[in-house]
Length: 109
Image (cartoon, rainbow, N blue to C red; front, side):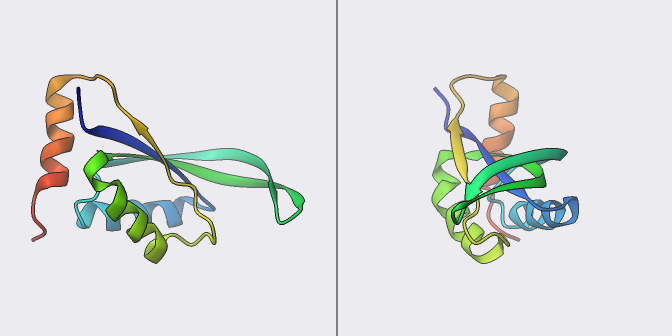
């Protein structure tokens, strides 16, 4: 079993995504962030259907960091109601999972 998790979020632009990922890295809340531009999101918001271009961000972290990520999203994420979906990782390459653990366990410098 592993404590690793993949967290999904969306942002309006690559620039916003880079800013968020870099800050979360600096705070040791994530080990890695993958930025996937070119996503089209269609969803219901405030009684209307929205159709927007967005960026998906995959954040690699540990379950123990999810609560701190939630607090950081409240401070850093530009959306009124940001997506934060944490998916548990049931298995993975041992060295990679160790790396996630190491990078999110180090104290802030």
